[in-house]
Length: 54
Length: 472
Image 1 (tube, rainbow over the protein chains, first blue to last red):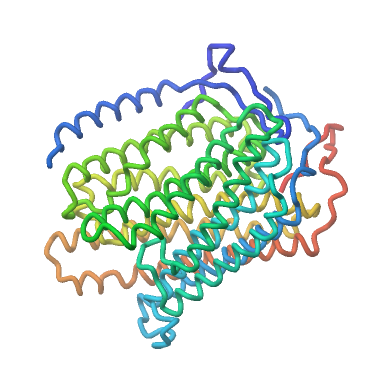
Image 2: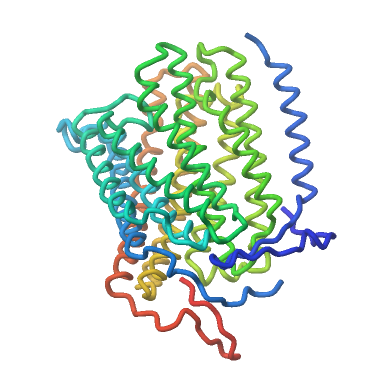
């Protein structure tokens, strides 16, 4: 897992939910996680095509 | 961003007595239901344990354990935490507060009556939906009332932005109102045969994935940034985690019927959806990990943080295990073995029970306005849980793989059962450890309310003159 500093000011923008006193970064998607999403998406298409039977 | 500055907190929006009542009754169920689990575990090795008294037999007590954990321990705590989190996040008091006291009594009455009826042999015959139908009507009414309260409070909120906890909570209640009705009023009386089994699989997994999971995630999303004293790592990841869960989870349930007579393509969809759940799980874990980076010292100071992070660890393992378990190749070994039991315990107990426990450690002292009674008892609770549950999960995984492999190799079924005996015994020891830990923890929280030192200020001054929040 990584928490490399985000490059964009928007990612570092903080929201404050006042009544609960919770702070939240806008954030972004880490590169390693984006790779996982893509890999799973490719696997999903392969598996559905290969194992689709009545 | 440095440490979060102290600001006035809005506990005046919360019905403190009501929340404490719900959480302390959850504390009772948190000890009772797992204790039934220990009794069941003993019976694996000593089948004559407690004799042949009908209401103490395995078949009667097992649903008491399962329903007691899901609806007694977990759901009672979630309802209490809902009455804490929703007003705080919306900036207004809960809609129809006059309903809440009635809901407390109806909920506990329905639960008690349901569990007693299970012990007496009344059972609807639906896994995770075993309460008799007269009790289901009461439970459904209570769920509908709470859902209306949550939705109207959110609509009437003063805080314009919707924090991720509210997405999960609103979704969890709405999904569950429909799922509970489906599983209890439609499923037992329609769609005979294999179709009913497939729909049954969907019902069970909607309890786990569209109630327990989102409600539990609502809790950790609320208490994690507070206990870390840091901003939540990423709103974007919150969005991806929520919507991917909502999209994939509804298709997962028929993975309970891999290699069964249900249509092959249905099984394939369930397998794909199960693997795609890696997306929401790894997304939220990254979000939690990112929040805590640079704030790990909080684990030494906050029991809320300890239990949340421990639960997150088990969530990662349990969900990866669950996703890969759906693959056909893995299923040939693990189906009908204790590997499946490992998964259900890693998720329901290891993750979600620990997360609501964390919420209780945060809320109870705060609302009672008292210091946690004993740090020593809290430490015992934590370490007995960690040691006991890690042992239980490891043993169940190993014995499941062993059992499945033996059967695949043609071993006699009775011989495969006999080989499990030392593992079952170890599981019982692990369960006792967990139960003792839970009992000490819940006793500690009860004593906090009754005898804890009154909190004079919610801030403490450090040596260098700064103010820090008082945390448990």
